[in-house]
Length: 245
Image 1 (tube, rainbow, N blue to C red):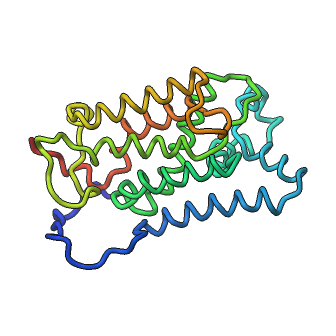
Image 2 (cartoon, rainbow, N blue to C red):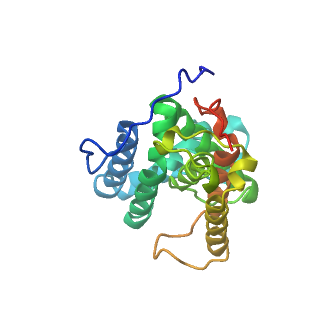
C-alpha cells in the first residue's frame, strides 16, 4: 500500500450539482446486493438439506477448532469469513444492510474498493476471534455481517466525528485521521461509543431490543469495533493527513 496520500484534495464549495438519492460506492452496493442474493438463494432456492449444509460449512463454529486440523476441511479456513455473508432471517439481513450502508459509505469512500475487500476479510476474522475465545469448544453458530459493520463503526469514529472545536469543512471521508486520544476528546465519539457498548451490554444480558432477529452475537460486535477503532490506520491511505487543533 502506498504511504503517500498525494496532494491535499480540494473540498467542493457550496451545494452545486444534483446528487443521486442513493449515492453509495459501487463496491458497497455490490456487497449489499450479494448479501441479499445469498439470503434469497438459501431461503427460496435451496432444499432444507442443502440449506443445513450451507450453515454447517459456512457458519463460524468454535467447536470446529478443538479438533486437529487434519480432521477438518476447507471450512476451517473459510468459515471465519463466510459466516459474515449468511443471515438467519429477513430482519437480521435488513438491519445489517441498513447499517452497512450508513457506516460503510464513508469508510469505503476513504479507503477505496480494494482496501475495503481486505478490510472485510480481516475484520470478519477479528470479530470471529473474540467469539472463539469466549465460546471455546462450544457448538455455537455465528452468522451475519454485524461484526464487520461494528468494525466500520469503530473506524468511522477515527475520522467522521472530529472534536467539535476543531472540525474542518469538506467531505466527511476526507477529514484528517484522528489519533485515539483526539477521537476520544470528541463528545460525539464518546457518547456514540458509550451508547454502542451499553446496547451490546443489554444484548449480553439477553434483553431483546430489535424484535425477533435471534441471539445477538455481542462478542463479535465488540471484537469488530475494537479492531476497527484501533487498527483502522493500517488501511487508511490518508493517515498522514493529521488533524490540527
